[in-house]
Image 1 (tube, rainbow, N blue to C red):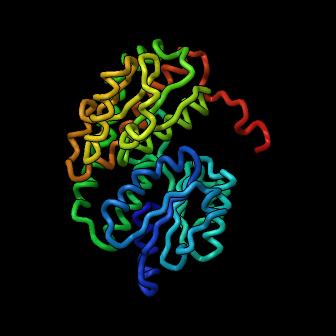
Image 2: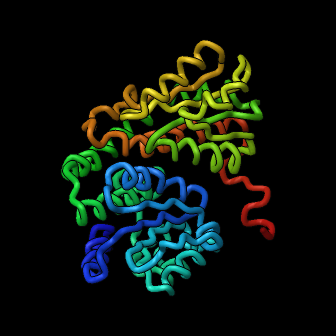
Length: 324
């Protein structure tokens, strides 16, 4: 089933109840981060639909009171067996709230507690237009378009049709830079990630899923708008920063932070969406594609860094190995 088909069916069933008023994006780790553009999209573009973005376990233990007959839960689990996410989906499913589950494993536990199961592409040769982030974003776009209407709907779909080519060209473009980064930063024990807007989720994922989980490097994701409200005090010539310069309305926030870093820091790696080709997507929707660009370009850096550090991305100390 496609996400458009799932949304269409849900909206038809909910017409008698007053339609969709709340959409909750629920997941853990990378799956939660992948929903960030969808959350920002609904918060920015919708006049009547509330968007919630929840860690699965928090959704279980701090359930929003407005969750009810006008709600939809969209959840994701790559293997389909993340315990907290399965429990969160089950809670909503048993309460009669429509659950759309995104997963790469169609015969997994999450599929048993979801009304609609949507698969996505994954792997080194994946179609970026079909990856988890874009599928989640498409769900948000369809919900808005089929309820309030979305003037930039066709323009957005044109962006979806272009994102695969843009990302793959950008990945080739950064190959040499990624190798230089890996050589420069392989001994570092801390690297900070910075970003803003719909692309901030990519910085968040890089920080917690790659540097911390897969490379055991201390990290934090810093919103560029928050940088000057505390975090900039740790800036010096030795501290490494990885900063995203988005295309779209929050670009000014990123550029302000970069200007400061260039003055007071020495070790800065910049991912500029315009330089990497994202500006070929129409300006009315381009901001929602920053995440897919940055997240997939980071991947080139991640493999180079893992190889340089002789620390495979599959290495774990605790995950899946001990009780937690």
